[in-house]
Every structure is written in structure tokens, then in C-alpha cells.
Length: 322
Image 1: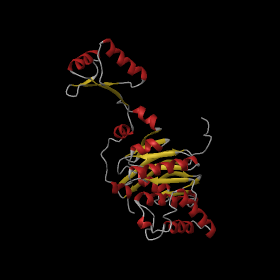
Image 2: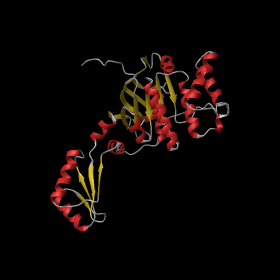
Image 3: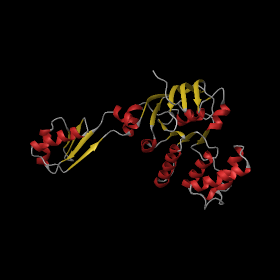
Image 4: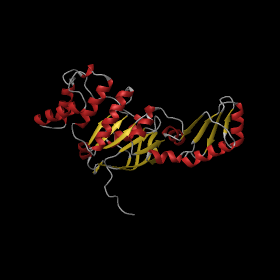
């Protein structure tokens, strides 16, 4: 087998972690290609945040091998820290400082010179549309503004790899989509992103690869479309105008699932153009008119429910001590 053209930005092999008697990660394997978004999905307690905390050097693993941006997690943690940025579930913004001062403080923590701190702060305030609010205390910012400032602070060090741990939790739809646009811009600039999220639509919109974590292991990984193809459940739904048409359609499509009260039929199986044409041809031969027709294909919700069947464990088992 040929070696990959470009080394993975993140490589995880056999990652294990327990908190007391509770095993949270039980041998996680994961590869994240450079310049892509990988979404890590899983129920509460599956190990998502623990994985992010280990990869960002906040928590020590119990076993396994991890490489981030070419740096070995155990042998070169300082190299990992220099290459990454982390936007966690809880904002790192200091509400008593202005937006500009938050960025300048992050520049000092990154050991940047005064002129470079000012340059990067000004550029990030512009990029995240925070110039007008730059001199206001961050406590006065809206939720969306605080999350934008949080991400801007992550970018002060110009990281090659960014961990976004549920970055849009609590945001309104407009602010969430603004954050999606920022993520897309980062990836276009060559940044690699590992994203955990509770919003399956978010993973579908942003991710090149989705990895499903359940009970401490990756149970499936692939593009959103590849994962959707793993799950049965596609169907064509027909609504009929009256009882006569419903009876004719039921006779023409004996394998369909009828709903007498709603006058609908669900034809399970393929949902492609050929399948749709075959259903319509059978109805046409039976001289049945249809009121409405919809096609349902499996989405990431279906994937999530199919692959994470185990009961959800309490979230605190995953997190361990803060």
C-alpha cells in the first residue's frame, strides 16, 4: 500500500483514558487530513471532550500514540501546544477586559513582541467584525460576539490545527451560520479543524469527515455521504387525494407501508431517479393520481441513532476533573 501523499495533521492510535474505575476511551483510532474539517460525534459521555483535552495536552492519556502537526504528544508536548489552538465549550474571554485587550493579552501569552501583538489584534478585530466593539468590555458583548472573540483569540498564535469543542452551543441560528462561515474561511486558508458538536446539521454542513464515537471507541468514520449510505431507511412518501386513489395506489404498490388515516404510502428501498420513475410508472398504469410526493434519504440523525444505540452515560464520567 502506498504511503499517503501528505502526512495526517492528527494521528491517533489506541488512545485510552479512564477516570477512576470508569473507562472513557477504550482504544480510539483516528486520522485527520491536513486542511480539512473532521467532526467528532457521539452521545454525552462518549469521550468527545476527553479526546479533545488529550489532543490539546490538557489531559494526559493512559495509553496510545498521538501525533499532532508532526509533533509526538508525549515526546514534544510544547511542540503540540505551539501548533494548535483550542476553542472550548466555555469561553476563555475575560469579560472585564475589552475585546482588544483580550487579544493583546493572548499575544503576550504567545510571547509575541508588542508591535506584532498590536498587528495581529487589529487584523483579527477586522476579520471578525469586532472593530466597533474593540474598546468595550467583553461582558457587554452578545453571545455571538463573545464566540467570535473567543475564536479570534485562538487565532492569535496562527495555529495549524484548531480544536473546536461545541463552538456554537447556545448561539442563535444567525450567529451559528456566521461561525460556520469563519470555519470555512479557516479551512480555505489551510487550517485543520477537529470539531465536536451536538448539532448534526453542523457536522453535515462543515465536515469533510465524520467520526462517530460511542462507548469510548470510533464505531464509524467517513464522509457524511458515506456514512448515510451505511444506514437503511430511505423511502418515497406518497399522499393520495381520496380513499379511491389510496386503494388504487395500495393495490399497485403492495409492498408499500400504508397509513389509512393520513392517506399516505411509504415505499421503502431505493430513492434514486430510477426508483422514483418505477414507482410513478406503476401508479400511471393503475391510473392513480398523487397529491404530493416526497423523497426521504437517511441523514446524520439516522446515522447517529443507528450507530450509537447504547444508553447515554452521564456527561461527568467523560469529563473527569476540570
